Length: 373
Image (cartoon, rainbow, N blue to C red):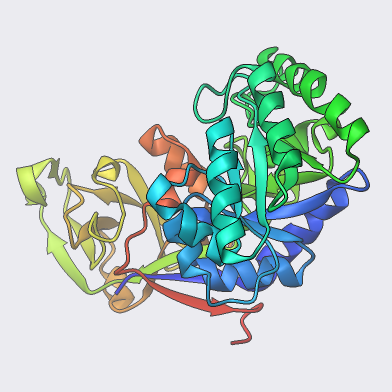
């Protein structure tokens, strides 16, 4: 069995650490999309709100539906909502992101029929090149239309940074200035409108990006938005990923393990076999390219990662047989050793986001507050 153990108290401390970073009066929107970055959306959302986050953000309406039974005051859907789902979005009362004038008309009509006031945020694409309009004039027309619609409330103006996690690049500054040129005059005329742009990296990089609210995801879970060392930024990884040694077997020099025989023992050794594989989200790219903590020590992952199992080289000492049924740590700490999601990502040539988001549904999630269940 592979299990992810999530310390909700760590999420709360990360949340408070981010809040301490903010320039007043900025608030914190906790981004809980992708099942809370693989940590589990509902429990993580409650932890973030308990620690002072003022609202939550998800990527789409499907994710919003998962949280619709909870009593959350504000839930921001950051991605586009298909026309056929707009009525449900209005009924659910989620905050919607828009950048076209016709959407204001549609939302106004639906909200009037339902007898409610829909909440919208207008998005300017300052350089991310995805959703939002690149044209500040068009974004301003959407703002004017939203302000004129009786059943629409203009809640915020927003953008998203493309290179905030690349310290020293100049494009971050360009995006920041583009957003300020467009948004600050509107804010001056309508002080109640929230300006928000910063993700985790921008929040930790530059206080000028804080505006009225920041949208933090990866740092909330204790991972480094710059892909280096979370502990160096006073962030506490909330998730530990573990398995167990289901088999210890002798492997003589010249014998192999795994599909393709990509590991051939160069000496007599012992292999620990773990019931964890890419079916759990432990990527095949870690074949002969990873480490696992067993018995308080680092051991190399050897051979091909299968769907349901992987092998670890324990070495030639016969005493390692005692490690049968012992805990194996894939992400987390054991005695004085530690493996972070950032280290795993570096092995794979990817980012820490993908490591935890890739954990599959068959990985059981366990929750605790500093080991108190």
